[in-house]
View 1 (tube, rainbow, N blue to C red):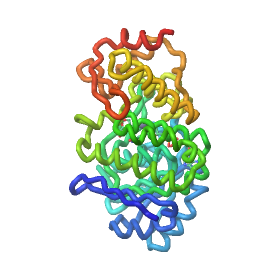
View 2: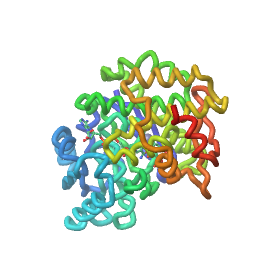
View 3: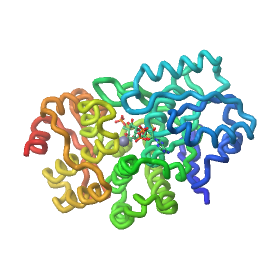
Length: 360
Ligand SMILES: NC(=O)c1ccc[n+]([C@@H]2O[C@H](COP(=O)([O-])OP(=O)(O)OC[C@H]3O[C@@H](n4cnc5c(N)ncnc54)[C@H](O)[C@@H]3O)[C@@H](O)[C@H]2O)c1
Ligand SMILES: O=C(O)C(=O)C[C@@H](O)[C@H](O)[C@H](O)COP(=O)(O)O
Ligand SMILES: [Zn+2]
């Protein structure tokens, strides 16, 4: 069974293919969309060892010429130095405007390869082949590409859409349980921002997802990609409602940067960030304390953290002032109205708002 969702963006529209045996047909699927016949498969050693062979065979069968580039693994390597190593390989191998990139891996690989594709020769086509739950439900879709700066997450990047997203949920069988939980944080986010019924479904079905039941995984990936595609269709470059997808990220990104990239998984930091956002929402009467508790309970069931790491209030404030939703010095946060709906709220007084939440 193969599901297909379209991200409708006019001439830059693209398909998301979701199934449990998609990798062996990658070559044919890239031929169908007239992807360049000379490509670089960019991955990490771990993922290339697991899935590079299947992809290589499929590309070869379909007549593609390809090279493989393996990058160092982990959030701590999502930076300009690693990006430069991609350009180096492409230039050494004479990649030109008739070539393309394939991002094979988690969100770190997808974000970096997307940014390399956006900038190399001012833009070459790329395909997303996400292999973590987080990348399948979120990062491979929507065209946000970036690297981190030591002082802040994703501060250097571009909006650049892939030509296709090829999702094989069978790749999730080799994932560490901690990575499944991290991906589920972004899934919970979709329930809180957009769909109360989906949130309730997650409260009931979370075990099937943790056990990696194939049908449950396809269902959750499909639902998540559809919610994201619907938002991106309306607001590709975050002029308005796309910011809803940033729920939990203002505080989450501060946690990641302050703790040292890689110490907290992105999904774990978002988990804590959602709890913080929900508590602020409750303080302002936007949601009830029962709603906050429901969010906490679901995150705990998914083995996700709900308490922030200890950093000074001033460090948190400084980090959050670098959020991309700060304009003319004022932060806009995404706050939940109950469960299933969010709003954008200006926070001119970050320090006083967060001192109430962070001080026990
Ligand atoms: N662009 C976006 O819209 C967007 C959305 C959400 C998150 N992100 C970014 O995504 C990144 C997090 O992505 P992530 O959680 O996938 O982390 P990740 O890319 O670091 O992958 C997690 C780990 O899983 C390993 N791995 C990948 N696939 C595997 C598989 N099938 N089997 C076994 N191991 C596998 C990787 O080697 C890595 O060690 C962050 O940098 C975050 O900022 C971007
Ligand atoms: O696609 C989006 O828009 C998102 O905000 C999705 C987030 O899950 C993702 O982590 C994104 O990279 C954060 O964006 P940023 O603009 O805050 O860096
Ligand atoms: Zn995220």
